[in-house]
Length: 138
Image (cartoon, rainbow, N blue to C red; front, top):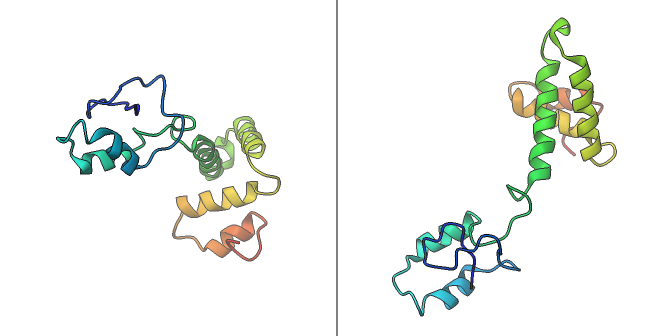
């Protein structure tokens, strides 16, 4: 039976044992609908899309990416503080953590992308050059 975190479809609510593989909405419907014709297919599709019927890696399903982007954004934001107010030891630690999570040579790319997101009015080409990346967003 398919595991469902919310249990709103009368499915097995054993969250400790999520399905061993990803399942499609069609597979879920084939297993569930003969027994429960009252199930709203739109709600079932929403449940599936939100990840309640499939296992996730970590908390969000893309934890590594979220943390990498957060580290880059935090470092860029701290760089904007006046020199006297910048917490250099913490910034150095953030830089080390970011470097440890990124493929070699991609730290500058993450920082440039973060700066472009935080300051959309700035020229992206200039931002990428500032972080040692020529030719923009390759």
